[in-house]
Amino acid sequence: MKRQAPKNNLKIGFASLLRDLRVKAGLSQGDVRKVLGYTSPQFISNWERGLSDPPVETVVKLANLYRVPMDALLENYIQIQVQSFEQEIRSKISKTALKKAA
Image (cartoon, rainbow, N blue to C red):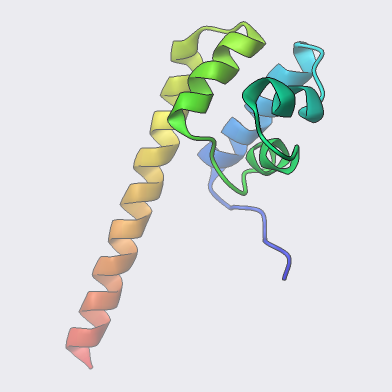
């Protein structure tokens, strides 16, 4: 089953930012994989397509690797995590309300 691209604009923006920064740094996904110690460049591909988020520790490493201010990446990352958490809570509230109504 193929995963659909997320509809979350912040997540898509962050994914594009990661890709753009990697390209500007002159690195391939394979290069990033090696530096970060991942077994497959698929991890990096998934981040750049917005299918998953890198761990926060990795965001710090990416900022160093791409030679950009850490705050720039972390602020985007935090906004995405807050939005994802809010969506999860709202979904749970909706499901709970539906169960009570039934």
